[in-house]
Length: 68
Image (cartoon, rainbow, N blue to C red; front, side):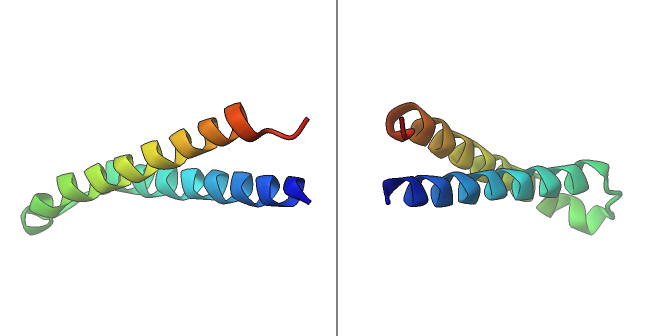
C-alpha cells in the first residue's frame, strides 16, 4: 500500500516540475511591453521558487522513502 502513496507523490512532484519549467520557458521566450516588464521578474522568481521546492521534495522523497 505504501508504494501507491510514494508513486502518487512522485508523479505530483514531477508534474509540478514540468509545469514550472513550462512557465519559465514561456516567460523567458516572451516579448513584453514596458508595463508588463515590472511584473516579469516577480513572476520568474515565483516560478523558480516553485521549481526548486518541487525538485527538493522529489529528491527527498526518493532519498528517504523510495520503496525497496
